[in-house]
Amino acid sequence: MSLLNVNDLSVSFVTRNGTTEAVKHVSFTVEPKSITAIIGESGSGKSVSCYALLGLIPQPPGRIDSGTAEFNGQDLLALSEQELRGIRGSDIAMIFQDPMTCLNPYMRIGEQLIEPLLVHGVADKEAATRRAIELLDEVGIQNPEAAMRAYPFEFSGGMRQRVMIAMALITEPKLLIADEPTTALDVTIQAQILRLIKSLQEKRDIGVLFISHDLAVVSDIADHIVVMEKGLVVEQGAPADIFTNAQHPYTQKLLAAIPSGAPPEPNNERDTLITASNLKTYFTSENSDEPVKAVDDVSLSIQRGEVLGLVGESGSGKSTFGRSLLRLTPITDGQISFDGIDVGGLDRNNLKALRRRMQMIFQDPYASLNPRMTVYDTLAEPLLL
Picture (tube, rainbow, N blue to C red):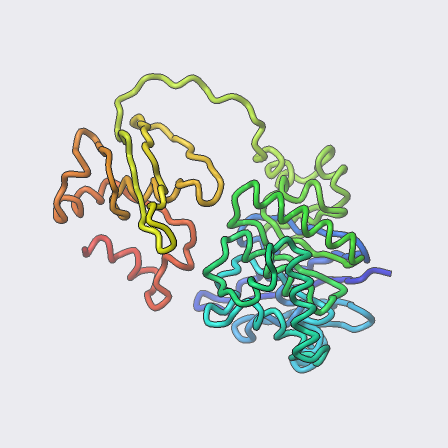
C-alpha cells in the first residue's frame, strides 16, 4: 500500500489577469521506504503540488479544483485546517529551500528544534532537548551542545540546511517533503546533503518526496521520478527508464541540459574588457589580529564577449571577488581596469556612472528585491537614479 497516493490534483490561482491553472490533473505516489522525485523547471507546478497537500496554499487567491491525496487512510485535501495542523510537522515534515527565510533569526537553534516536540506534546522540554542534541549529532553538526545555543547567522548555508533536516526529523515523521533543499549550496556541500537525506531515509524507513529542477541531482537517490512541465505530469518512471529511454521531448530536453564535461572550445584572442591584477580584499576579524583574506592576490582578465566561470566552494571568495570588481566591497590592494578605465581610482560620481556599464545579478532575489516595491518600481529605479 502506498504511503501517499495523489490522484487528479488540480490547483489554480485567481489573478488580475484571470485564472491561472498551476497544477493540472496531477497523479503520483510515494511508496514506503522510498524516494519519489518531482522534477521540473521553475513554474512547472512541482512545489505548488506539494504545498497543496499540506494546506499551505493561501485560499484565496489559490484554490484546489479537484483531486485526492490519500495518506494513512485520510484524504489530506478533505481535512480541516485544525486536522492538518496535527499532521504537519508530525506525520509529515518539510525541508524548505532557503533555511535563512525559515529559521527565526531571533531564536537560538535549540529553541527552534524543540518547538515541534513541545507544540505536538510529544515530549517535555528536558526530553526534547536531549532528542535535539542527538539529532544534531546525527546530521553531522559538530559539538551539538554548543550548536543548540547558537543563532542561525552563526552557521554556514550547509550547516543551516542540516539544522532544517534535524528539525524536520525530530518528530519522527512517516513522510518527508524536501523542496529543493540543495539549490543554494555549492556542489560539494550539495553532495553531502543528498547523501545525508538518503542515509537518513534508509535508516529511518521513511518515504521522501524530493522536489528539484535538476535531474542530475536526483539521479543517485530517487527510486521513482515524476517529470512536470507547465502544471502537467509529462512522464514518470524508474530512474533507469527515464535516463536511458525518455519518451517526452521535455524530459529529453532536461537530460540534454546535464553538463557533458566536454572540454571548452579554444579561446580566440579578443579585446580585454576587464582585468584584475593582484587583487586583495581583506576583512578585520573580531577573534584575531590577523585579517580574513577573502580574496588574496588574485589576477585574471575577461575578454569582450567572453563568459568566464569562477568556481569554488562556499567561503572561497568568489562572491567577494565579484563585488570587489564593482567596488561594492572595498578592496585592500590591487588594480581593477574596465575598458581601459582604472576602477580603483574613480570618485563616487564617476563610479556611479560606470556602474551603468557594469552590473551584478545577485544570488538570492528574495534578499535583493524590495518586497514593498512593485516590479515596475523596481525596474524603473535604476533608470531614475
